[in-house]
Image (cartoon, rainbow, N blue to C red; front, side, top):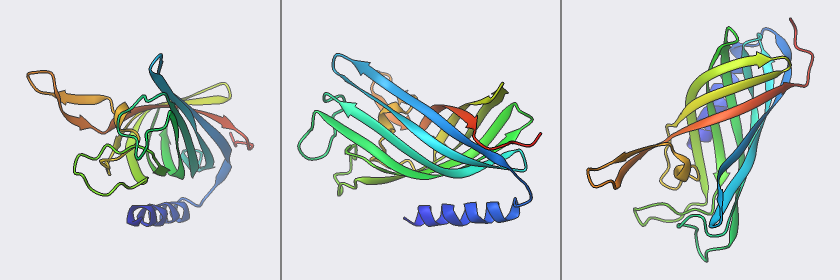
Length: 197
C-alpha cells in the first residue's frame, strides 16, 4: 500500500506542476491475448483515461481485466478452478516526445488467483505492480499507437504478469534460473475531447 500512496503523491505533484494547459482527453485500450490453445488460455484488456496536459503529457486512471481458463498455469491458489480472473486499477503518466517516442510509469493494484511464490510465505491476493518504460508513440489519423517495453520495479513474487515476462535467464542445462520482469505493451489511444492544434 505504501507504493500506492507514494505514486498518488508523485502524480498529484506532477499534475500540479504541469497544470498549464488542458488539451482534451483520450481513451486508451490495450488488448491482451498471451496464450490460447487446447490446454487453456488467457485474454483480457486494459483501459486508460488520459487527460492530455501541455499536448505532451497523458495522465489518468487505468483499469485491467484478464480471464484465464482450463488449468493454464500451475500455482492457482486454493482449489484450482477451471477459470479465474485478474482485475484491478491504478494510475499512469506518459510523456510524449515529438510524436515519435514516449516514456512513463504505470502503477496497478491487481487481485490475482496465482501463487507463484517460492518462499512458502503467506498468499497475498492483491499485488502491486509499478512498470517504468517507454517506446514508440505515433499518431495515425485519429488513433495514437504506443508500442512500449516496461520493467516492473516492484517485481512481486506473486505478480500475475510473471508468466508473461519476456526475458528468462537459463543455465547451461536450459533450466530457467531467473526471470526479468520485462513486458511488452501495445496501447491504442482514441481522442474523446477536442485536442488543440
